[in-house]
Length: 124
Image 1 (tube, rainbow, N blue to C red):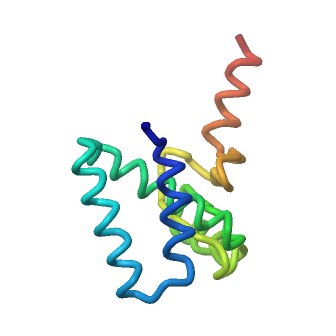
Image 2 (cartoon, rainbow, N blue to C red):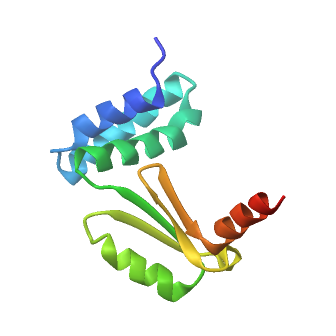
């Protein structure tokens, strides 16, 4: 029977959530050996991403991605999301100003680039 990366990730989380570091490493090693025997090692990256997503959800942590036109803006925005969230910050001058913020897959685009594109559409 084939399992999805999400199913593997949930099982891995449940098995390692309260385990010691040594026990967690052993569980991961066993999973790797199992995937190898099933010729499913190609799922490793998807399982890792699903695991991170599932762990954040279980622990009440949001994934926040901030793209801002300037470093100052991105740092200021990152402060508002606190230490309890997984915040990834990047500077993208192509936004021209403002920022794009994505929280658990929901995107808020308040960039000058998007506003200009909207005005351009209205003008056509």
